[in-house]
Amino acid sequence: MLAGILQELQYAWSVPTLHYPVICESYFLFYLMTQYLSPMLVLGFTTERYIAVCHPFHKERLCRTSRARLVVVAMAVCCTLLAAIQVS
Image 1 (cartoon, rainbow, N blue to C red):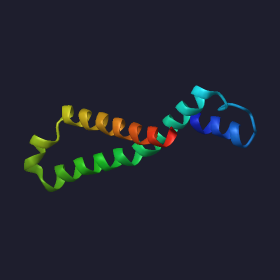
Image 2 (spheres, rainbow, N blue to C red):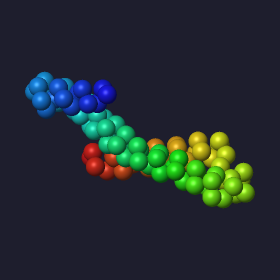
Image 3 (cartoon, rainbow, N blue to C red):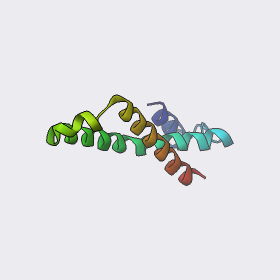
């Protein structure tokens, strides 16, 4: 929501919200990272549901809370690194 407001102010209303060096890079890093993370999280949740429904005996071994946290953190780091490549 805040990212959309800042971009609307910048491009539609010509208010200089993103003209500062650190703010510009960090804004687009955050913006791209959230754009990449959204489908990745959907993929992760869909994979977890697939394992739970189609392979119920493997669910106890593969679908644990600690593993889910680790996968979400790994996805966030991966998406941040992909976004950082495009920002620089």
